[in-house]
Image 1 (cartoon, rainbow, N blue to C red):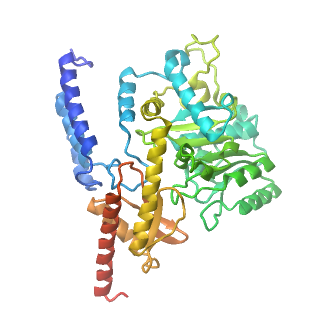
Image 2: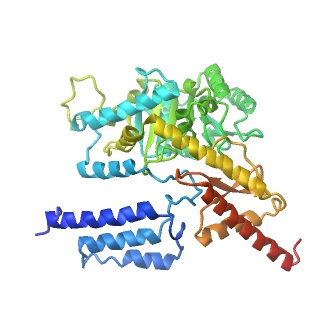
Length: 482
């Protein structure tokens, strides 16, 4: 008879093997390629080599899987990964995921996991205080990512502005509901509108100014124009740290506009919200305390394992009004207690204990530990800008965050150069960067996502792109293209 538990001896042997493999990877993942070879046939053959009619031993299976992962993923924890807010995870968060998997708490009903539920509520309130929300009024929920948190925000805004929406759905709309955000905002805002039944046309993407922040004058003009056209604005989304360039919208002015027109003000600070933990950086997010709700991705600048986000609001009743449903089958042990069942104020129903990875990290490192790491990564971003300028690269964005968009001063009008440079860097396996258009020009986008990225790594990146640029110029010269 098959035992899904395996034997104690098999478990011990396998855990020892796993710990050895993972420790070698975690402590030494600076070796080898940053990026995988994208050989589709080879990768599929590797996946399909698993024969489920002829199972392997547990140790053989683990070895096969970890070898494949070592070869066929982008290594996000590598200090030469300058990517899309995917960090090297701190070790306590790795342990938290293991602990969560073994205990496997179910966070739908409070009574099933009371300690875990209270941990997450405590974290929500702690971060609410960092934002500037009143402690007692703060509520929120852990989400799978920023996309779910932003969907939650749109749902809360709809339920607040259209009281009949929860029961009647889109029939409650007598005019077209409208959401406003920056043209540089994350596209999860559009997705939130689509899954909420509003459609893409209900999102107004407002032009940006020279600093790539939402143009607040254009915002108000658009709102007035839409009201005159018979539409019904209900929400503004400000961004604190845009994905492309790290721009921070004028949250103070947006809050003023939202108040003037009685609109829900949501701040998507999925990445940049971590600046709240550093005293000298917190003023960058001035006005965030006036938000009705905030998105903060824990798996970004707070360096925990994928995936974990927080939706935080200063309206203690809105999540219940938006998501509460009564059922006959859910546990009722906590029925007479002054607690909230997580399933009743979240998009998710059954879900894992996401908050433990943040809770354990804070227990080990504290606020000061995070403050030091964020400050160090920000300094690395500033240093990268300096090195790039010294090597005749032009910086195209102006964020105080550790994100740099740059191009060559003399090749910026060559549309082929930046895509070719990016492809060459990634194909080399030595680093990972991406392309992002800034003010009509293609730029290389490099973000410091790893707390172990040192000045040596920054120098290595610039050396790599300098060499590739030199090769490009030689090819242009040899081809007669000047």
